[in-house]
Length: 258
Length: 350
Image (tube, rainbow over all chains, first blue to last red; front, top):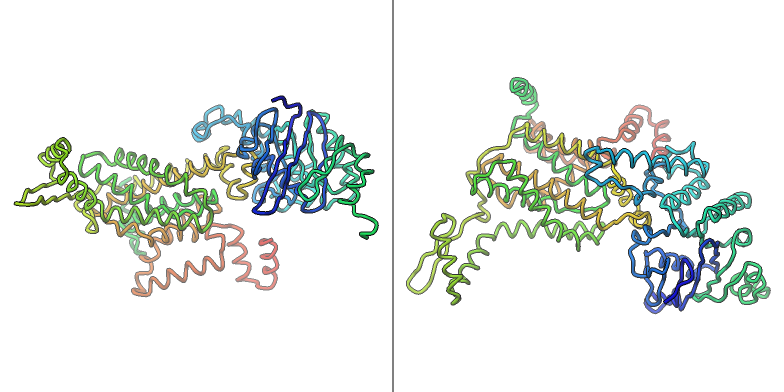
């Protein structure tokens, strides 16, 4: 079977008892694209991301990443294959500093075994140096260098959001899944996040972004998928989606509805 | 060195800490490190007394029956406990919180009950073999009897009587050689502390902390959560087994009753009292809690009450344990200038 995209979902369904959170969802994300996933609350957007990252598994259907089936794989295996994510509700390691959060993100990049670290063999130090350099690089890039040693739970909201993206990038992903990256941000901050997403694409990272903010979708997305009640109702360019009657009705609401 | 140690003991004896008490304190410190490892990884396991029992019995059997030295015996006991921890950990560590605690208490109780009845189980098996008509097996059992003091098979007119005594059930094993000395315990604790300091600075140690804070996110960061949890559980079991091995060679006698549920509660209390903010916390907790009844000897039958009050006070006023700089500062602040520091304390909590 030939798979064209970087990420491909073929008729994925996820049922919780009698409730169909996802029903026959097809999706194709090609290398180098920025793809949006929109839909009203409860449409199944986060369930989709959970299924892609292995936190949840489809009841039926397949998910392929780089032509490899991943719908039965464990989360850490999927991360090591090159998928990273952020969370709708920020989930940083609150007791750790920003810097330490970025070290955790690089867990799989480390090569020194526990034995080598315990006995302070050379590989431990070369690894720690390498992880430290990468963490510093990420801190600077996301304007977090001043707060490197602040506990993540004490950071302001905007810093926490950026740190989460930085931590996801620390895993060296090919595909980055952003779950509402601009929730609670003002328009200026939202645009800044948009710039950063575009920059990631220029570096060769494919991005799948869940968003409510249509301005961000228009700013960055090449293609948009629309979920409603667990079904993929349509997909197309942001402009096509804006004009699509079904989307306006399902997602943006009808005139009579107001 | 020896003179120095004697002088130290003379000094501590004035507050009731004699050599046996010191031994108990050091054993408690090792056990506290054992439970610290699992708590630090966010696993509420209470199997430590069970692994301690395994360590004590395996090492004692090796030194007493086979004449091994203390160190190889304890090393072997640690390996046995570690190997037993693998099949226990794989299914049980999928549970979390209180469910995990109950499952591991179950394991510890199974160990204790097996030790109580081990001799009878073996006896029943031998009787079963003798009653069967498998000639080869019967002959093998008979030859074992011929060169062993543990097993005695007597042929009566119309039945066989089997006596098998290795662990001696509830009476426990007696006449154990006393081999453990203070310096061994102190040295072992120092090695453990060095090990833990290195562990905390390693990639594996960071993964442990990440799992404690958010298991789901840790797995999304590429950490193999099942692997890390099981390795930590095995390490914890091996350290508990070492504590058991050392304790087994302190008092000439071991019995299953010493490794029951209340022992587990004691071990947990070390970590609760000392706090799990750093490795020093549980060690201090273990030392203090074990020393307290002896230091409080003067109040005789009320010392249990005082120990309880100290524990309760620590939980209420120092919820992060005795070894928690912020907490101690906050407590002193509260004591000396109520109004002002109360506000500071709230900031700390946030």
